[in-house]
Amino acid sequence: MGRLFGTDGVRGVANADLTAEMALGLSVAAAHVLAEAGTFEGHRPRAVVGRDPRASGEFLEAAVVAGLASAGVDVLLVGVLPTPAVAYLTGELGADLGVMLSASHNAMPDNGIKFFARGGHKLADELEDRIESVYEEHRTGAPWDRPTGSGVGRVRAYEEGFDRYVAHLLSALPNRLDGLKVVLDEAHGAAARVSPEAFQRAGAEVVTIGAEPDGLNINDGCGSTHLDKIKAAVVEHGADLGIAHDGDADRCLAVDHTGAEVDGDQILAVLALAMRERSALRSETVVATVMSNLGFKLAMEREGIRLVQTAVGDRYVLEEMKEHGFALGGEQSGHVIILDHATTGDGTLTGLLLAARVAQSGRTLRELAAVMERLPQVLINVPDVDRTRVGTSAELSTAVADAERELGATGRVLLRPSGTEPLVRVMVEAADIEQARSVAGRLADAVKSALG
Image (cartoon, rainbow, N blue to C red; front, side, top):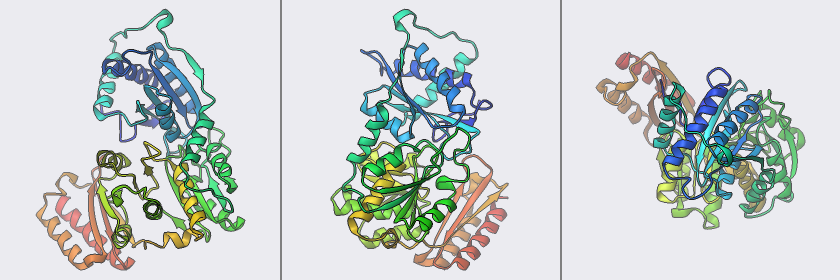
């Protein structure tokens, strides 16, 4: 069996790859593994369970709750809330486990299960491996040790979760948003109620789009993966800025008052300067992945802020932040982690802090985002090659060195083997788009020649 857990939980087409039986079995396995690890020792175990609005989340939630309660875990059902809300409430309520049912920015037919450990942190890889192993063992016939009588878990709705999370978001704001007009695109997702409520309570005038989830329309032509609608809405309503979330609201992209996109790199740059100004940017360091635009790196160097880069994936950003105590990190895609207030990317929090910077500075988001210039970036996927030899091919090393000499200090080359497919990704940045395309094309040919 291939590994069920990816970088962000277990995902697949609901009721095909991810079935009710699997959701139940994984939940029981998680309860047993955490019990074995001593997490429940000395007290009655408790879990927080939330979901995004996908139709399949209704039956998957029922399966997860049944699995946990049958294993003796009490369950607090928080309903439809963003992934970072479930992480926050897991920590805030002292729960032993958090479970979020969502496939984030994926299309509606998909769904996923993500587990949080005590404190609202991602489960360690070894615990995920153990859960998967125990799940597989019992899926093939080994009986569970089941509690009876008063030992079974109890289930209740925790409706206070909404207000507690909104209050938490507002407590993180350095200033109010009075005078700002903001368009919010909720992707018909998990933040459809939370985000408008938080922005309104913070003082902003709010226009919402994509805020009518019906279980079937999540991420459908809207949200952070489809920005055309929010760009048009910002201009139409004369708003100061727009904030777009994905289905589970763990990411945020923005639009300035002219309708121009402000990506995750630019958001990080704006927040880094704002946090340093109020002495909240620990070690004057920001963490980003190797896929961040070179313009971001050059801007941070110019501003005297240290940049630490990690492998691609917000999990690696978070690991680096936790290990060294850094306060801010994120990805170009809009996963931004503010570790003093969240244990995972939080799109609503990111949007609020970005709007707070606009309100506090008296400058437009366009002016603030101009702290960095996005260099042209070209990405080519080269299929059907031996991705394992990217780092060992002498021919490819020579081609990369030639490209780097041509680009100089204002360009960059990155070759990344895919983690799941027999292909290599060629990324080239340069001050001129035509040069970036030319160099990327030559490197793609070199990859085919060397690894094909």
